[in-house]
Length: 102
Image (cartoon, rainbow, N blue to C red; front, side):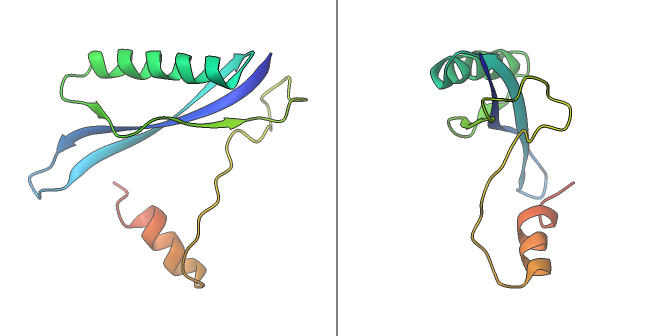
């Protein structure tokens, strides 16, 4: 069994401004394969959407396999994602994280 972190993005609703609200969810599963993690995440996301009328899934989940030696989650790296962006770190932060945060 191995830990997998699965990121899914769900669209909540439209705002009066014409923008929409999106939620990034990060779910952890201890399963025996990446396929099993994807299956669990799709079922959990479908259940979440079913319980929240008007929500919709934005794309297929992204899956990150934690190091195989991780047995406990305390202090474990649960997600890592690389992005290409502007050379100015403050500009990258504003565009990636602050521009649309609530």
